Image (tube, rainbow, N blue to C red; front, side, top):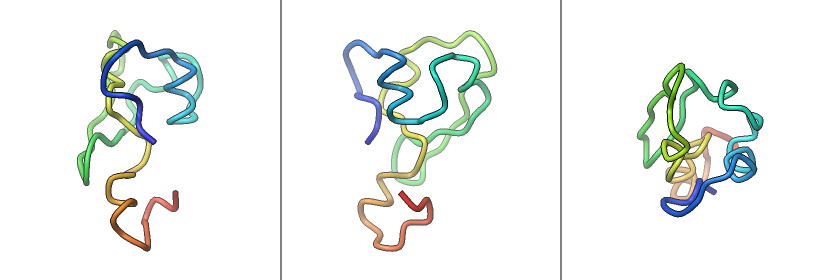
Length: 73
């Protein structure tokens, strides 16, 4: 499950998807997925909640199409 692509985003939703905690500092500098084999890194400081739109902590797009998912989710 990814963070929704629009609408209000709360840290409870973000933490439910990533499981990294409820503080922005726990996401800073970490790698995330936003599509099949598409990764990026959260900035190390000062980024908006909207940066979480459509993101996930694992490659769920690939996991949905490949039986032996590397991420184990």
